[in-house]
Image (cartoon, rainbow, N blue to C red; front, side, top):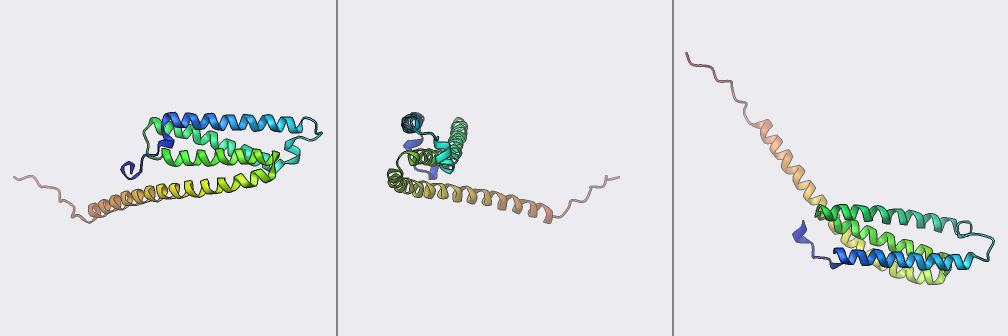
Length: 164
């Protein structure tokens, strides 16, 4: 499966660290802006944007989980690292857009269009990875079943009788 994948430079060690740093910077900047906006308001963003904040925490959890899985898969040199990396990228982009929604809804909608383009691209890559994984798994299962059927159909050896 690895030989069928083009090498994606976005999933090399250094670029992954840059992606984490950019995501952390964006979240930090947006968090500071949200604090400044809601500092003079009697309500918090959790009260005014309950669903958005819940979705943000879900996306953040998915991001963290995918990041850990990606590191694990990278150390094992697994070909599934790209799939998990795509999930991480989607979760980080979604989390950023959700935070932006609490600040500027119109800007968040415009950026959501860009996020949708990223989603389509990464979903296409992920579907290709999943189809290839499913194909390999199916081939392995069919091969194993073929061997089991061949063993079941082979004539049983009769116990040899000692010659007297």
